[in-house]
Image (cartoon, rainbow, N blue to C red):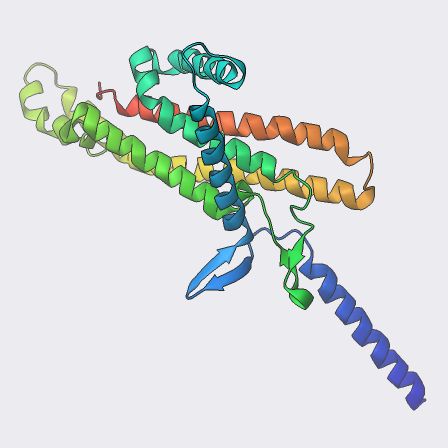
Length: 282
């Protein structure tokens, strides 16, 4: 009887250890620390983001060094891409001047998000681990971390306000959200139109709702990108666990397309925010 109990306890301990070991290798919704420098933790998604930035910078310098008056090869391709994007941007901004002005900022968003999305599909992402018994993935797609997408969305929305102030002035931009002008006009306009006493306060309240909309922009941009990229990585991990060869390939091609579409959608939304910020309130 004691031998039976001892065997049972050993069996339970082994089962508990196995369960814990499996959980440690599951795809976590949050980025995990792989190193610590002082009080600064380096996560696997942060490491991947640094690699993405270095890769983009290296490609940019390589293309710049080979720039010629008569474009050939990669330069010719890049000029075609830039021209295509500018034509595409014109449909949103309605002005080539605006498109050219916003292009560097928007294209930087696009390239970083695209590279980060596609890097998450490379072999080793999610499979190469560090940490021994408490192993965590060494690499994780940068945009599969909500911290990264939230930072990108915050930068985009803050930049739209900065550009709005620079383009139409701080007073006109301020009145888009706290429309003091609508309240100040009530006494003068009431003589001509009695409905002003009802309409202008509504206009003022609508401006306050725009403040909420700005926070909604941040949430929408960050969660949309994070949700799509993270879900894609989980899907690929699940398919790979079911059958390592053959089955994940169609889903990988799908994720390549999704990665491009998400980078494009994020960039175009940011472009629309920047474009709207340069227009005065009616």
